Image (cartoon, rainbow, N blue to C red; front, side, top):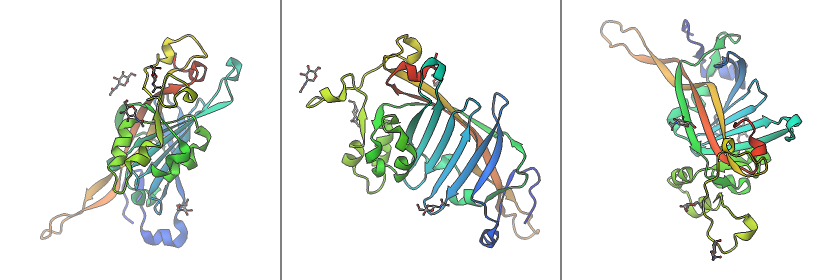
Length: 280
Ligand SMILES: *[C@@H]1O[C@H](CO)[C@@H](O)[C@H](O)[C@H]1NC(C)=O
Ligand SMILES: *[C@@H]1O[C@H](CO)[C@@H](O)[C@H](O)[C@H]1NC(C)=O
Ligand SMILES: *[C@@H]1O[C@H](CO)[C@@H](O)[C@H](O)[C@H]1NC(C)=O
Ligand SMILES: *[C@@H]1O[C@H](CO)[C@@H](O)[C@H](O)[C@H]1NC(C)=O
């Protein structure tokens, strides 16, 4: 194997993998903006064509990101610990399901071939991809989510009433080969002013709620916003130039990865401001 100097992660050959050197996942120490060190676990499943990444923030929030390349789906799940002294539940789980562009992450196959040279190293992403705002305008019915991706139900079973998506994402998934628009539309519903039981025969209308930060009633619904940052992920491949031998031009080969950081700001319907006390 060639040596890659400072490059953090290197490809191993398929042969090494067959000889049992393969590990099921990578453990990466990441330094975040606040200076804390987070331990990220990244694994891939080539059969399913998925990558999953998980870490716990220093405030205890457990964040899981799953990318399903085949179905162009990203699921980000947040398990947020409650403040019991303020009357909150022990924890709450939210799931955000969005359309995913293949270009944002390296493939599951490339991911499965990565190994770290120095596992203890504390890593910082090379490129900051900034913040993306996701205004989640739909509730997603987890029990019907199989038409979007089978992984939603696996990951979001605990978030039956708090799994969200967007009209924009449904429009993207409708473009997938073999998709049924009717089946996709049936998985989701707009937020409405009237309770579900009173909706029979009526068209549901999206409503704009006050931001949780702007309301003082702890028992009123409001739009909560939650920022989740993926501090380090492999977002592209690096190519190195081989030495030409004078006659042949230099060829390039994959010699490492590019790493990125990305933050998501999810705005979503919260049944109670009480469940969104960080948004003040
Ligand atoms: C990968 O996915 C397949 C199909 O869902 C599953 O059978 C297998 O156990 C998974 N492998 C790992 C390592 O999780
Ligand atoms: C995202 O929202 C934040 C505030 O919620 C705002 O400051 C920022 O400009 C927005 N970014 C984009 C790209 O819309
Ligand atoms: C939500 O409401 C918008 C605007 O009324 C509509 O275009 C959209 O189809 C609705 N989405 C669903 C899933 O019902
Ligand atoms: C739908 O709701 C509106 C406002 O609550 C009401 O005026 C209208 O009659 C309802 N329509 C049906 C078909 O129930």
